[in-house]
Length: 384
Image (cartoon, rainbow, N blue to C red; front, side, top):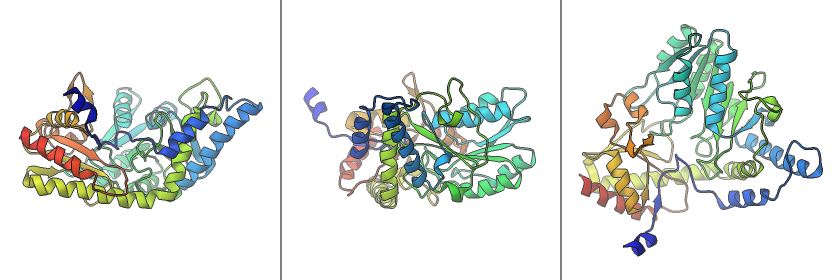
């Protein structure tokens, strides 16, 4: 039995959580490990490290159509989201922060925490049964005095792509600030910071073959973004701390790939997602319920509920059989809590716990998914 487990083929269907490194990215990180200097030092070794950082800044800027001076490196999107929200609450005279009810926990939990302060007002924007935003609810919050609206470009759990440009334009009509979390969009969808017009955008790169532990704030010209930390003047005083040069080198490498391959990657992910879905529908038919907006979605994401099967049972069974998937919700003390996203869509706790997220990456073909379909089908049938 042990030998069989060692030889088992595994199918990784959890790209929305994190992704394998592209070989070019891994090579760039390994090479940068030989950079011994601190990027803030003026000696030769320090300036070699600085060159890596500034090259990555320019490359990322080109990948997302933003001025290089707009890019501030952080330790990831979670840190960047916290910085935007917490500094707004701290430095705004009468902060009123609004976010959607389906945001990533690094936004929604911060907003909930800030809302406990007497001087900070907060509000959650509702979604419908398909997870679509209520723009009238956004407008009402702005009419009530919202000072900052935070909305994700695309949802990490159900894959919905939101009308962020419309939200940005609406927010600016009321002279408020708009923050967009573009983490799930990076490398999967065309992304132009200039066209979007948001005041600040946040992202990380580890969902599309980049390294973990590095991300960015993208700041519109003229927008004042205060630092959340003290202790240094790095990143033009916006994010103190010694830069993670190897991780930033990896970000540089994946940003180059995004410039070259994003349209191809999108096409490949769409094909692979559809092939996976078609295979499951062919064998499980009416026992499958798709969740989320199927007309405006990421090209790589499926959120599925299998009739009579809890997400926890499905995920544990699939993992043992060689398929890595997710519920999109937190796993604590061995039990999976219902997804706050699916709950916000109007499902009860029991229904929300049935959600399973399958997210694919790009690839040359689709035949490798046949094995994943077979494993999923056999295990779900056994659990029904």
